[in-house]
Image (tube, rainbow, N blue to C red):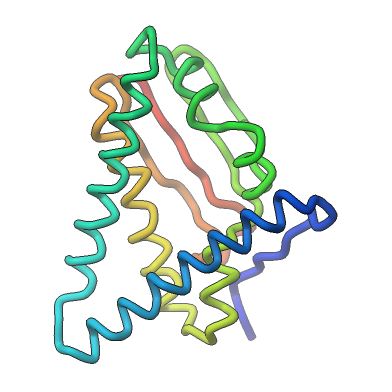
Length: 167
């Protein structure tokens, strides 16, 4: 029996479906590259974590450059959590204060892609954590914010908990 429950509830929005499909395509690439690196005897986890972290830092720097107030979690949220992204991952903003942003994701198209490839739940959990290195990189590049990952769908929880705190 599977412990991962990753079912989309928003299924009638063409734009959301198209972007989810693009994200699934990217997740498929990631999994296949990881598989080929492992077959070649490479340290795929370190390589993948480093690359995804660099990507997060790149995007975090771009976000930072757009912000008028580098310390504002509310301004960060308006740039980071756009309306389409919230629909794609079926997000709920649980808390937004001057000091904390707490978001729950109820669906993940990356996990959907990995499940379609029949990847083991153990590997999905690891791939999910590696994918979160992008968000960790965003937090790292934002000098006044810190990222913390809570529970995840890949661990068998009903949501992923994404948190940013003011340093």
